[in-house]
Image (cartoon, helix red, strand yellow):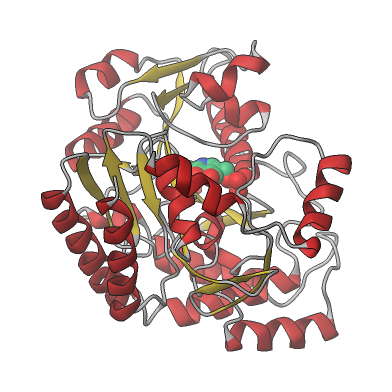
Length: 411
Ligand SMILES: Cc1ncc(COP(=O)(O)O)c(C=O)c1O
């Protein structure tokens, strides 16, 4: 009963003529691949978004982990304006002033040496797969297998889909790349059994994002490191969702002490604060897998995105303790809710990457949140996912918890 009423309330939000015009045009002219929530977003400021009708939402999803500094951050606006007036694109035929300094910064914060710039996470995954093929191919033509995890998500191109361990994304596009072995997360024996001389790489999300915010254990990651060394394979960490400050460290593999170093790191989402930019960062051994002419991208690493990313890292350098602290508060308050509502099964995550697992579907709660001015989403059907901007404050977290409590009480 409650759900029916709330669905009605949330679906009426966008029925203004301006909203109808937007949704009507999309229905007529766009590929119908997205099932969008009924909100037309117009602008953002700080941790808030405003829809086309002027309604305000506290943004706890940040464009699925992209808007790390919230919306309309003054320092980001300033560098975009300055760089847009100077040079937006020049292609990778030439040098510009920002790729080198950004790659140096990435080397400093990651402990890896060489960067390739792409436009998205998927593209970074594709490049990393090519790097692994290049690495394996130099050793033996049979060394091309990839080990990946059940329940993982690495993107939607054919290569990235081939190593994504969720049948719902793969089923319409098979056959995909051969030589991929899926193993269950945190099962050391299964990982050991999957490795062989044919293994070119193993790719792991330190915290599975789309799969429902499931972290790896440190022991598992360390064993993956040992096995990759033993079989001369590459260890690739996909930190597209879980990295670049979100866990309260630059990268999630730094949560372990000492860090479990990958050979290759792929990252994207927050790096250029909403401009498309992905990175592959590799040690020398892995980077040798890609020689001259073997890879490239027209837009990758343009001056605008790279300059914004440099500014982002300058801001992020001072923010990691805040992310750790405010993320801890958020997780604690969500866990507290878990003591009051029996349908909450678990609260997990690191820093500002938090999942609340329910034993009921989460979609209606997301719609109810929107009706009450709160934006988050649900992944894997039953996991409410919170990826707020890094600038979120404790009072904003408290406010979110108040609203969420109100919603959950009605269930
Ligand atoms: C872990 C992970 N890998 C890869 C991707 C694909 O990145 P993109 O959507 O930027 O292509 C995503 C996107 O959500 C992701 O979460």
